[in-house]
Length: 130
Image (cartoon, rainbow, N blue to C red; front, side):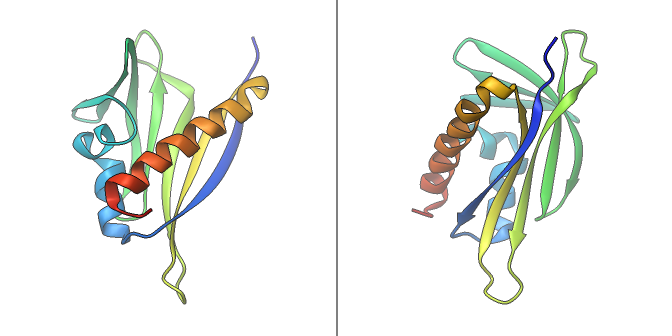
């Protein structure tokens, strides 16, 4: 079976880290831009897109800085794959960007990056960063 490759993309955003964190760490925030619906029960999150349902476990978080979700398999066990959203703030300029760390199969890499670009575009609209 092919393994996925890790990649990172950075998106500049006009937002405070505090506001941005609300949109990347809460089910209601994530529902506004990342998935059609997001539910959580403790550390377990369910992401729903159209007829697709994916489960993830909140692996780690640091308030106003980052959040990491580990994808789960059919038995609700951790897989090798995760996605992480990191808020970076330039100390001098105070410019804020969101760094996305994700995995994709080699032949789906450009598709996967494009999907993130579209989702971050939605996020920018939601937070008024366009």
